[in-house]
Length: 125
Image 1 (cartoon, rainbow, N blue to C red):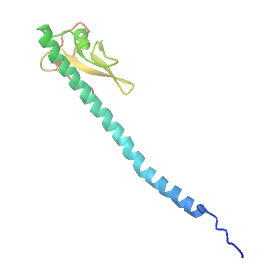
Image 2 (cartoon, rainbow, N blue to C red):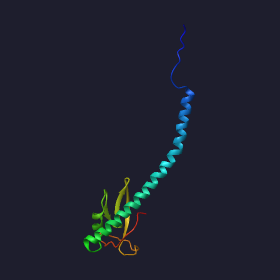
Image 3 (cartoon, helix red, strand yellow):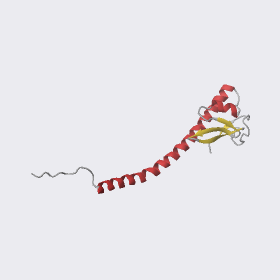
Image 4 (cartoon, rainbow, N blue to C red):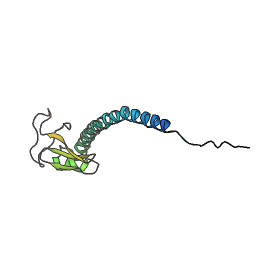
């Protein structure tokens, strides 16, 4: 009796088709992922700006006066937070950004020193 041995495995054409499908799906998914990471960074900037604004309100309630830029930085929670001449410096995804602070309640006069009194907190540009 002759036994026919059938080889198990994939043919070359099946492997090429599978790789082509994976490549096509990757070509569709990668640009979407890149767009999402940009959106996440923008959301993190808005969130950190909101955190500094909340910290400003807490500092006013705690100190019973407007805080200096240096004092405001101590109220903001997070890593890489510091006061700089133009605002509160924060680190988002390894990059440094500055939340602008102002010496008037209309957010029109930017502070120029860490000892300036902060009456208004802006956004990260």
